[in-house]
Length: 516
Image 1 (cartoon, rainbow, N blue to C red):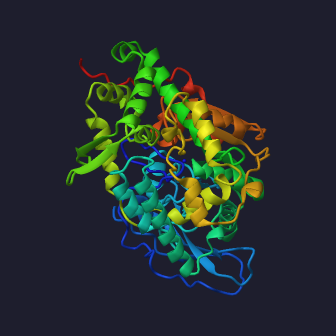
Image 2: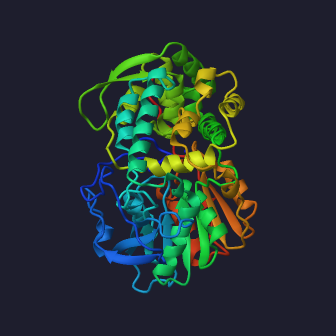
Image 3: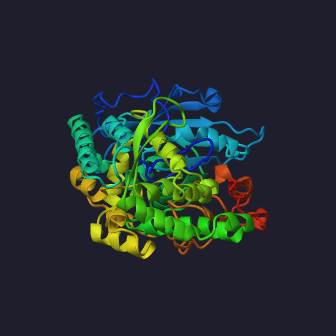
């Protein structure tokens, strides 16, 4: 569940990411600058303007048309504050593009959509159509920007604590409170940063740009948002593509455990089905179970250098950290059997170095304010710590309760939500989307964040949907799979009859086999 935490090597994302990657652009709105965008009630409108300038230039933006969508912060409060959402229209490669563009909905919530543009371009999203990218409310390049540098700085230190350490909890809650206090002191209505308002923003963007009909492509939280958008604002939607789906009706905090179990289990099963992997790494499930229990009983404190370079840092590896590193793809699935075997033989350096990577945190890149408002308003209500623990027991029987008590990637989330204190929106949000709009649902078997089986929940009420399962791929499938890219292009060309033929015969990439 956090931002798309994506790297060029793995193209792996989380549904929620409490640690972002990439430096803070100099053009980004400072999270410390109060935003006073108050205006009389007016319809949303698009104002042309310069494109964002990330630290690493994005070539596609050089030919894009950019600007801001001005919308009410809270549509239920006439005369309230107006906010600005950065958007870009990227031209199609084709000289004769289709009339219906593709609009992109990023993961997260809180992830920088502009950071995803190179992956979208490389995946062919603008080959035959314009590609429209808009930062969800509160994101980087928006006004206001709901970044939480306090949380980023905590994440830098968190590598030196156990996953559920008391000191880690204290420091995290302190950072969350400081961010909340600062944002609300600036006049931000945190309860207005939710999926319903997000969906209304995209509906307003289509109207403001004068687009009669468009296609929607979202991944991870972006699928949750896309389904909310389709349910609440179906007008003008030609087709919907859901990559690594997170259906609103089932996305609750305990849900993270079943996704972790499914994705990890599929990796272990794939190793067992590959003769070389099975021979080199027998009884991998037992190895994982033993290492989780061992590390939880006797955590390791190690000195490791971040992969990007820099001074070595002290990192703590306990059972909860090990599990969460798997879910976050800190170690790639193809390397997982080798890494577990090394760990069991007294060589934890692969995991230690991967953990040290999290000590390098850019400040101000992720909109933690949006992350927490969605998680606390839509995912947490109606469940409890005991529900999480019970889900953990079902997923991994026999594991220590100290590991199972925290949702993967969301430690102390119920305590965080008590601090964040936003309106309970579960009843209005957790609703299945019933629609006959053509849809394609793309999942990867190695996805540990939004388990592949949740495609069934999304498809159940989408009467014209096609589900595609890509073996050996984790979170955010399309950028990692040429076959998925072909399927998606075929779907947008003919939504009622996509060509899925390339999926037959696909197998996972061979696992890393280390010498004995």
